[in-house]
Image (cartoon, rainbow, N blue to C red; front, side, top):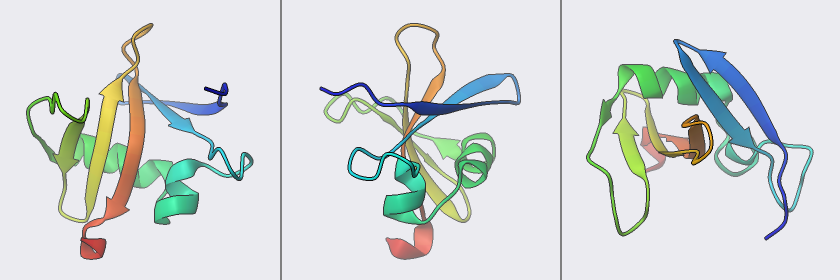
Length: 91
């Protein structure tokens, strides 16, 4: 698997990792694929309700009023890896 660059943002005592897209490496994956921003994901993380760990998909799901966030923890530093974040009206 290719090494992907990440944008790292620290907020609210957490470190968030936003990976750049594999096909368009100069654009963040969440922005290119879902039209959302790191700010959207960070707000959803802190304002939403998080479900239990989904063993099948290896992720957490957090649902906020406006966004749904899928995330996991980085094995090395326990930072939040943002897998995807999209507006709930897309559901």
